Image (cartoon, rainbow, N blue to C red; front, top):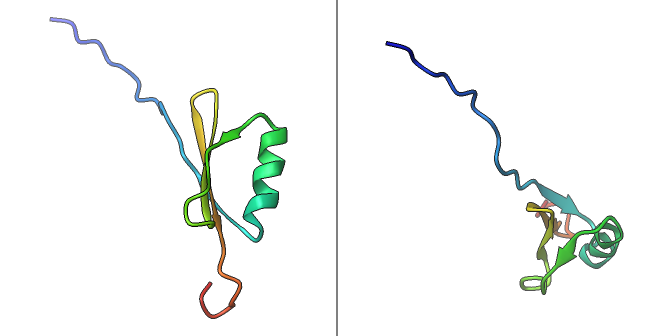
Length: 66
């Protein structure tokens, strides 16, 4: 009896970046080719490019809340 071993592989990855300015970050990643929908509650957005996702979350301005 023979067994076939398949190597595990990553099929998706969705990193979340904490950013200081969500609007500015969206513009930056759009220049790299990502497309974004409307931000959620003005602090969270998901960009897509070639099946990849990039999550951007605006950090609280108050240092204690960070």
